[in-house]
Length: 315
Image (cartoon, rainbow, N blue to C red):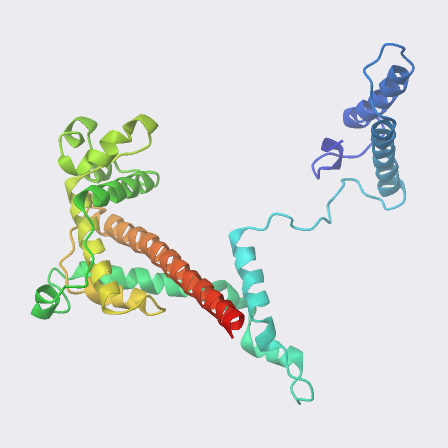
C-alpha cells in the first residue's frame, strides 16, 4: 500500500502494486470464511478492509477525476534539509519582532521586507562561519604569536582549571576519529593517529586502553595531542577570566593569538587540516560550556523557586 503512494510509481489499472491490494482483499475475504482460522477481532478486520478499499478509491479518484499520473507530486516537504530548517527557524524566531504593534502606521509587509530578505537568510549564517575560519587561518599564518601574553597569566592562574593528560588524550582520540572520516590524504592520516602498539605504551592513553573492548577509540598522534592541549589551555584561561557568555568565543580567539599553535598534517595540507581541527575542537568545547552553563542556570532557578515556596510556607 505504501509503494502505491510514492511519487515514482505510475498509476494504471494493471500495476502490480494495485493488483497486490486487490488480491490481498480477495484472500482476506476467503480467509474469513474458513473454520479453523487464526482469531482476529472484528474491529481489526473491518479496519483493515476499510483502509485498503479507501486506498483504492483514492487512487481511482486522483487518476480519473484529478488527472494525476503520479501520486503525491504536490506533497509537502515532510523532511526539510538543514538549510530549510534554518530558514524556518529564523522566520519563526523573529515573528514577534516583525509583527507591527496595533495602531501603528507601519504595515507588516514593509517591515518584513526591510528586516529579512531572502538573500540575507541564505548568506548570513555562512558569512559568520567563513569569517571565523579566516580568523583561525590568520593565526596560523603568522609564525610568531600576534599578541604577547602577559606574565600575569602564568603567575596568577589560581582559578584556572587544569585538564589531565588522560582526559586530554581521550578527547584527542575523539577528534582523531572525527577528522579521519573527511581526510583522504594518507600522509595526513599518519600525522593524525598513532598505531595501537605505540599508543598502548603511553601512560596518557590509560582510559583508551581500558575502553578498547568497546572499539571505536583511536590513539591520537603526539602532534594532535599537543595541539588539543594548547587549545584546551587557551579555552580554560578564557573561561577563568569571565563567565560563559556571548563573547566567550571572542575571548578564546584572543587567547589563541598569544600562542604559537602546532600544525598537524602533511606539508601540502597542514594549514587546511589544522584550521579544521581547531574549528571542530572549539565548537565541541563551546557545546560543553553551554551545556554546563545551562545546567548551572537551571539549578539556580530551581533553588530560587524552592526558596520562594518555603518563604510562603513560613510567612
